[in-house]
Length: 309
Length: 259
Image 1: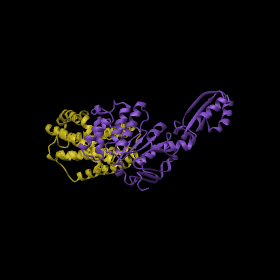
Image 2: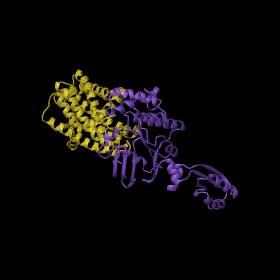
Image 3: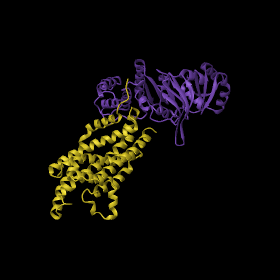
Image 4: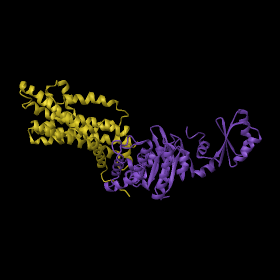
């Protein structure tokens, strides 16, 4: 496994009496887009901070670029790009100076940074804002600038912690687009955390699902859905509890039945059959929704809880 | 392909200088003009009164007596402020220090950089103040130029531990208390405006352990040209504060930025 970009064994982070990350193992290969999916407090950000060498592991082993994260922090950080969850742009500097000064933290020469900063601002559609102040920028612009800043040292690995949380759909799609383009053109590897299943499905080749500091599943989005959920999901709501209980028993023929509050979720490879049974048995439903299985379902099945909880 | 920066703390100084270049006007007002105004009011105005009644202080004119006091107190008090609110901002309000820590500089480099920059600022404002004071006749000795490094050392003796303390705080409520209870009384009673020998014995020891008194004595020795062995003691005390402050600051910055 020596060639792994990031490799963790028994990685643990404790704060006083709280265990944030509880002995996890994972490996990220060069060129991969790897995700940590899970609800808030699952330990995703703590893991990212350890990979980013701004939080020493309490126990376990962690290597990044084959270097020991505990001892070679500066050498590792020199090759990383970091997009933190909370914006921390330098509000005392202009948009362009944010990139230039950030490049200086890596010891890069002024001239090289200036050329690169200008093209990064264009790439992130901020070219006309170079001399603007940072404060009045919209949330989406700040996020784009933060990503541009993370690219100033031409990193081999980009760490993105909840990259699109709080952004409107248009901006999210622009960012996803740019991240695709980056991978295609410069071959940068990505590690991202998210609690949005659609983001994980869009961006990640492979991901782990975290819950309560542990990894509960690992695989490609499609493989995880196939393994833990099913291709299709039918969601049914009933007017009467009696109907719901009757349906639960009957629909087991068509797939796996999971109660979820006042709904029934049926995981199946034959949604048509479920719908036909509901109709034939004259079950009185108030709503019927047939959709593709998602990572949300995987999470629900594995933990009994929803990602948004 | 990037490489590890040779001296990461210097890059942090560069950031501070870049930010300062946009905001220097306000800073010049508070760190140069204010002490010069004090010099006019105290050294010339009040000084005329003191000199006519008492024939000066310790054998010199009041202007000559109060010039190093104002230099040391002015630079120390502004360094104290600079070591509190802006540093809290770097952790909490703007969070820039977290961004820097994600790049090559370590928390210790960030501490060294912000403290070194505060030293540069003091060197600038102390030089400007000394030029004005010399033109007014407040600096009789050419050794007066040594008052600049003395003021820098004295300011860092306060800023180094204060910045370390700030890194342990979640809010700035205690800063005003520190300013009112510690910094401002020291400003008044550290031999700045009148000799410490005029204080009652019961409180004099309080002054003697204050870094500001040592700074005032060092600056006064330089501007008046009376530099004796006691200067070594003052330098040692102030350097001790810087060393201890830096040791503490490396710990608190690391705990804050790399928990």
